[in-house]
Image (cartoon, rainbow, N blue to C red):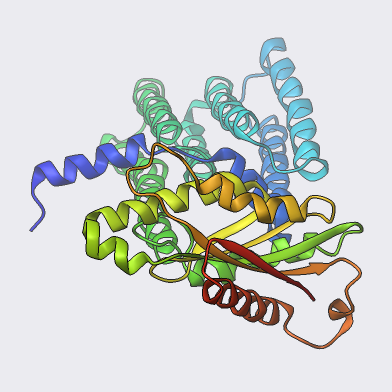
Length: 367
């Protein structure tokens, strides 16, 4: 059974976990569903404006200059925000946080000017904002939203009890249902999404180095290949294998061997990471798929050996590198072949040639 301390630690880790807003925005903007999500957000935002207009026709609504003026201002802002969702890319950190704050404050202001009898029902709108926070904001912003939403709901319940002829049992029932919707559902959903996301990511990662595994590489490699079709660019598959790794394990032990594997992974990531994807595909073998200009590709490939060297290393290593390069004007692009598989096989073959020739070298082939 899990101890209370373990549960607390898990909750703290969840609350403090970093949230990659840049990755989230890039992911949404690179997927067809990202545009659909922006349209959904625009429609939901416009619906808030429609509710503000409809509330003007309520018998009990305030018709003061301030109330009508504020609803007019809110309606204009709603239209502007909805238009931004449709016409602009999915926003980063500032955009999504600003939208959540805008929605929270707009809902709270509606509580002040809408009929008191509708206050608890109006609070249900916080559930919609909570759903947005669940998927697009960090746990800390979600918790901030939940505190604000719960406080507003409790205040609305108190105001309803004091300003309307409402049965107390009925009021408690309605308030509790709304609180479950606006707090319980988003919080539970975020915890569940976090667990599922961690499980999904871990299934794509090598546990020792944190690099992609073969499955993760297959999932991420397509975007790199598409870049290679641009004019004057190319794609290269690199297979990198540490020379005589068994002797390192035999001489220094498996712990030092693991440290070597991690160190090579980190340096490969620093050298190649910005140009594509990198994976650990075997015990001491790595595979990278990179895209860059045809003028730069040779320097990038041959620079791997230099990037891995450091005179301060307690255990120095060399690597054998096989590379297969596909230029943007290669005939392979127009043939009915699996270019990724072919290039990977060729690069793997080149790596074994480099190793058979004594290691510590690069052998490449142009497809």
